[in-house]
Every structure is written in C-alpha cells, then in structure tokens.
Image (cartoon, rainbow, N blue to C red; front, top):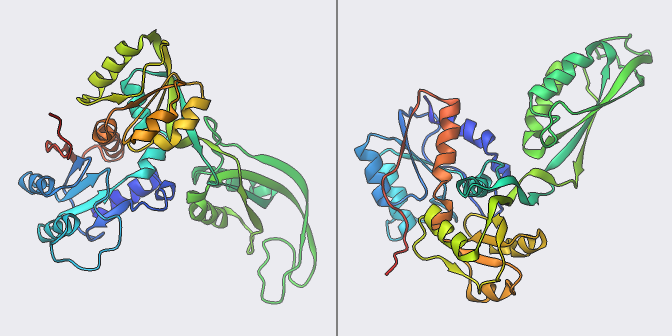
Length: 364
C-alpha cells in the first residue's frame, strides 16, 4: 500500500480541519508515493521508537503527538526534534500524526477516557463551533433523487445521530443561455422556465470540496446554481472534552483510586475534597484545564484532565473535584483509537503497538 492511501484515509476519517491553529497534524515525514508494509502506533515519537520501528521492519510510525510543531530552519541534529527528523529520514521511516483533530473527533481521546471509566450517557463538553455550512441548490424535478443521493453519499446531510437530512421547496426557475451555451432543457438565446426544487442541506466545512464536486457531477445543468452559507450552530457531536455519568455514585476517595487504577497514574494530583459523592464526571485528555468553567457549568462533580497549574486548583473553588491524572496517562489510549480506525479500513494491513514507554515524567 502507498503511504498516500493511508494518509488520505486518516486525513478524512479524523479531519485535519478539526485541529487547532497551533497544531501540525498530518504527514510529518515521508514521500506520499512510497510503499509501506507495516505501521507502529505510539503516543510520542522518540529516537527509541524509531529504533523499535526499524527493528520490527515498520516503515511508518503513527503518533498522537506531532514531531514537528514549528518551522525547522536547519537540520543539524542539535535539537530533540532535529535528531528525530534526521533519524527517520536516514532509516526511511515515515511519520504521521493525529493530534488535536483526534481530540475533537467524536470517538476521540476524551470519549475513550470516559469509556475506560465506564461512564454512561456520554456527550461533548465543549462542542465545535463555526465548522458547519449550509448548501442550497436548485434541481430540476426529474433529477432530484440522483443529485440528492449523490450529495448524501459525499457526506452532506448529517445532523447529530441523523443522516440524509434536507429540505425541499418547489418552484420555477428561469434562465437563458448565450450563443455558446448547451442548455440541458430549453433553447439557447431564449428564456426558459423550468419546474425545479430548491434543496438545502448541511455539511461540515472539511467536506466542502467533496460535496461540491458531487453536486456538479450529478447535476444535469451546464451551469449549476448553488449557494454556500456559514452556520453558527454548534456541532454537538464533535468538540473538546466530554461528560458522562458513573453507573453508581462513589465517595471521592474511592473515585480517586479508580482514576489512578484505570489510567495507571502513579501521581494523581487533586483539589481539596468537596465532600460530596461523585456521579457526573467531565474529562479532557491532555492539557484541558481551560475547560474547567465548562465542567463546573455542566454540573459535573469531578473534572479529570492534565497539566494543571498551581493557581488552577484554586479555581475549582470547592465547586468541583479537579483531578490531574497526567498528560501521558490521560492520552495513552489514543493509540487504541488509531489502531481501530486503521484496522477497520485496512483489515489486512499490519499494525503494531509500540512497546516503548515514551512518558518523559518519572515519579519517586
């Protein structure tokens, strides 16, 4: 299989447009046309992971954390990043990363955390905004089904747990072609009136090119009339963090021990005990303390994330049990998400889990 095939799949399955502006998800190192036989999945890319990949004859590393965040001005091997990039290139190993787009993904890092804790009724904590578009187009009645099905097949019409969503309004369209036109109906240089259907549907912004391509291919008119509108609606199925409920409420200490056990977190930090039972839990893998206000507003009894600073613990203000489970510990299950995605699409492709511990933090 070519590298570009798996990259194209991951780019669309976990849309690159979902990533934060500072991020650099996607293909980091490698030639798209190169052949790949085996991939190894890891949270981080280190020199040890590259050595492991070479030892296991893997020519692709798929990671959660990108190797390259900022521009590289030189490759001399002086910095941590430069050493990794040079080593990967020298050993012919490609590197692909899915970072904040995997965080936002509706089956992403935070949801996997929630599932590991056994939470129920899981929903997004901070929904994605400004990523929805509305398409309006005008279709002759004879071709409504063909065009509509083509748009839905391209991914349009998804609203939450429903697909093939759209709205129809019947009317009459008019047009007149010039001397160089080839009208589907009517005659050139003569105004024509046609019974048409106004069809509107929604789509994610990352689907725009694919959906428009499907529209133009299926529509019979030489010139297709359509409008694209940006929507301010929240995308309730995608976003950062999530919230859910335990099957049974727990005492705070019991819940803290459960968090430590599930995430194998040997250094759990937490705010002063609130003195209440824990039932509703909010989570955000990695550095998610910016969602603390969302967690409190949601009525969560506890909020699990990582990289919490000293003063952030004061912000819990006895309203919520704030828990730092560790960055590595909260995101390590990202490898399982990536594995499942790849195997579902390419069941015969060899994918291995890295056995290298890349956690840079040690505990005494």
